[in-house]
Length: 410
Image (cartoon, rainbow, N blue to C red; front, side):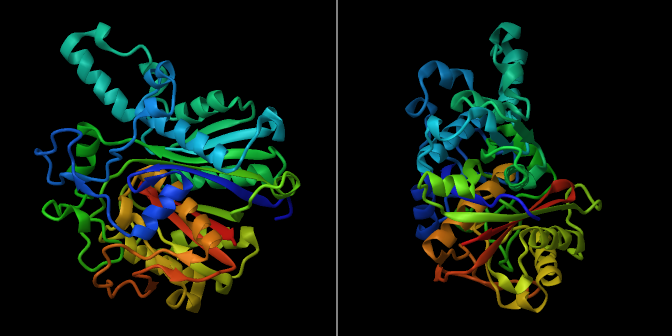
């Protein structure tokens, strides 16, 4: 589609493997899983007792004490990651009209974990024990509105809850808004803080989590024949997007170009992907068409790769449908082996990693891939590989059959 080109000029991240653009990239290159036994709450009642926690984040290190107290963890992660992205992109208030900047942030669960804690306080000690910020903390748009407040942004502030495709969907919507001239710039991404007992237990109950409790470091293993479920994590990642011409005019460093976005819905099952991968493939094909990129131009795929028995097979089929013969040779990696699955934040973390891979000319490997599942006929990288692809694809597939795909150019 005709319109403004869109530049990625900054990255902010708070993740189990590192913070900020450099910390995230260093964590990717270290190729060590951050998954370990949960100590945030008592997980002994559950068949899965492992997660990818962020253990080195204290909101008070980044926000003033009053601000930190007023935000739940989901919004804290979002606001801090957004600040990091703005700093990384060298944004100045003078560079943009605040009414021409938007915020798009996705989260599968929003402030549900905080709500869970407040309900427990209410049951135990009554209404006076409940935080007065509860009503403004739990709704799905809380992160977007809090980032807008923190950054002084007056354009659209949009939150979505498209399950595990939320972060990628937010980025795609922000991209379309800039390309269409609705805004000139955006802070966009995903945030998730789901590590609370009832929230975690809900996923454990439906049997989607790994039970490799005796060896947490190898539990998240995308595309591996021995994968047994995903590992829940928490994270936030934000990108600063700008009209390409405006980014060039202010001398900004451009990490990559965001070129295409596509979405689709399986309309098949609440948790299982459509086995054929046909509708997920439609999202990829739509993103390629949106970018004006041919399948054979894709030189790298950062796959959703959730480490579940069903997902990777359906995703491999989707890639073969969308990329045709090229799917068998294009380098693919599943980076959730490092930081688990932070639900709605995952697509944003992986878009950030894809942009950094293009910027550095280095494609990540796939942590914990010991034996490739024969049903996944893909060229899955096991270690970092130097390459300078012209274009890359990042995929996100969520509960409810919600699919999203992003195309980036180096």
